[in-house]
Image (cartoon, rainbow, N blue to C red; front, top):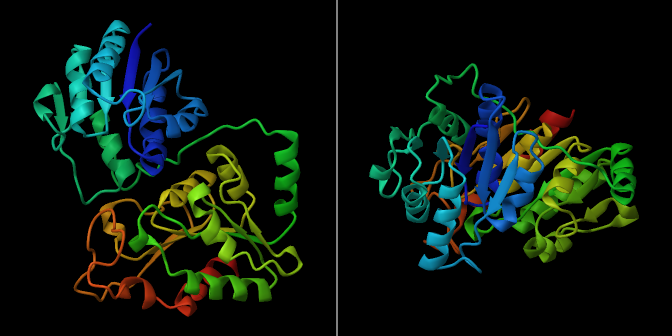
Length: 335
């Protein structure tokens, strides 16, 4: 059986956005075995994709840190004798794995570190969405009419989680994801608080989602009059979070991984851009989704990932986008 490997050892959002490429690969190569190399924190994403056969993990910041472990992993890849390796990831370590694999048909981006190790190089187009960029590795023409393939994840519900879903399915529920790894990507919590209060007054339940690191932030928005707000940050797996979102009428998120989880759930997503911009290619692209951004600032964007604090100390990109403006967009979708 032909074996194909996809390498994506970046973070959660990047893992979700590579799923359309994998799904298309499986469609084109129905009888091939599609494997994925991922980091431990994103393994569950690929384990729950019907297009993936085997997931291998690369704990590059933990047990497999260092050159010896990298060489051992390269040997493992080589032993599986892949006919093709696709690498949306562009790091030096990934390029070294490509070199060590000795695979004769390797495809990557022209801006990858040590790009010379790849047999086929595809131009990385910074003007396109990340999904469309990834699909370009297949060598086919994915234009504005056919690139918007939604990530697909399967999940077998447990009894306890099914009961939780039933609660939200019966209610008018909006999901809020106020967290981010980067501080300058976080819409101000004071603004999120005003939005939460207004939604509750209008009779909407608000469910707050995120990782364990977002628990305290979400708790600050957990106003909870008559159980109208629910803080589930750190309590759900990635797959459970996607399933929960399927029960919600809308997701309001920063420019972070929950945006892509909302697209996977195929619900309307409103993504708020503080220090970053949609043009970087990570915006929600499913039906009824939209973006909000305060763009009349000479300092914006201040970086593709964001920063731990505003470089000029004002954070105008967040504060000047008023809660009223955000609520107007929310009601545009909900009503």
